[in-house]
Amino acid sequence: MRKAKIKRKTKETSVDVEVNLDGRGDYKVKTGIPFFDHMLSLLGRHGLLDLNIKASGDLEVDMHHLVEDVGISLGKALKEALGKKQGIRRYGASLVPMDESLCLACIDLSGRGYLVFNVPFKKRMRSGFDLELTEEFLRALAYNAAATLHINILYGRNQHHIIESIFKAVGRAFGEASQIDKRIKGILSTKGKL
Image (cartoon, rainbow, N blue to C red; front, top):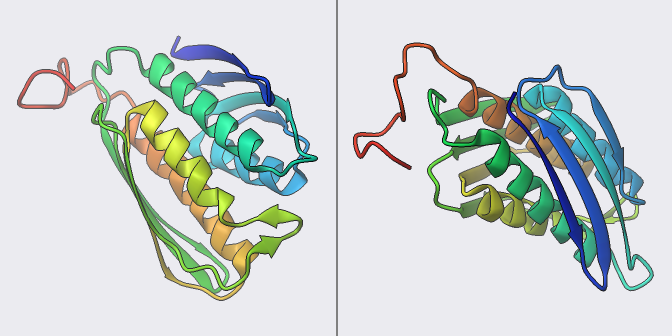
């Protein structure tokens, strides 16, 4: 089974993540940040990843430490669960509408962490969540999963819809890229390794 468990404890946060790449999109998420919990649930559900995330931290300071550490931990869990990446499709892309918003997410499970984030925010806060932390979470996720991730909002007005379309699109793109394709022998690369 392609599963992983990661525990991360610092002086600022405590994060436990379990992931199953061959799941059904079942999730149990509790970070103390309800809006973030909702977005992580969308990522798991739409990527058909079983996620169990329990995190706590110094929210009295702000959300940054916890959101970033969840990204680090989830990225490491995804990388570990992928193992040697034998037979995976490697690339995934998803174009997801959420009402008036449209997000394109593209991922390459290349072994090289990188994030391109083309998302304009007109407001800083939404439902008590600092929207700028979306980029911090995705950067930590991409670098620790060793994935190249491109996020482009093509259009949209409602900040909640924009963020929701991002998390759904990332989940779907990752779900596609991590699928096993029986036609692929070894690694999908002319180099023979990622």
